[in-house]
Length: 298
Image (cartoon, rainbow, N blue to C red; front, side, top):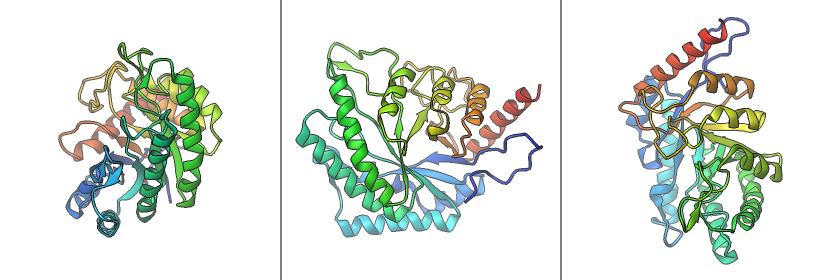
């Protein structure tokens, strides 16, 4: 499958990326997918969050019901010509692959394993995991080890469904969130590099542009290991998920696109941001791309 949209470009000019956006599985309907395709969206990231009881780590529906819901979503996307690029795995205080308590960590790994069987139906390219939720004070090294252990085990199952695993960077302007919690793992360029360096080469990076100030620095640090992105604007201090063309946020999109080119990134420009209308996504990306090309050709 091609990684770019078929837009003509001069020799030496990077072709535009495909455009995608994040939508829960309940939102993957024939109507929404047809409309998205008609306004220039080629792929989506989806999630099972609406189907999971985070307290009990169980599905809200029977296996048969789950299978039918997933098949309906897959058909809606396929019929519209939309690729299901990625699945964002559930996360939270209870759903954390880095949990220190071994029995609880095992339950989380087992939940993800069950979800991956439904992911098999969707045939995504990428399975995205958060490295952790917030951490208790002074347990960071233990939680890194637990996360790495979980990731290595789950990667076998991800590969079995012919997808790749990516680990997302997390928001962390300061180490401590408050007097009780530290920020999640992968909170900085340095920590993300360290953790990725301890993972097998076939576990890759996802970068959320809303989780770090100057995301282009992390893009360049990850290089070819970067396989998926979340597109949103912000300032690296809090979760904002501003739409890139809203005039909010502080991201330098020209430098970000330059860094993506340097990293040979070929995945979609996957929005995970607030928006008024899906049609705004392609228009916004095209304007950012043109500014990038203009700057590049100066």
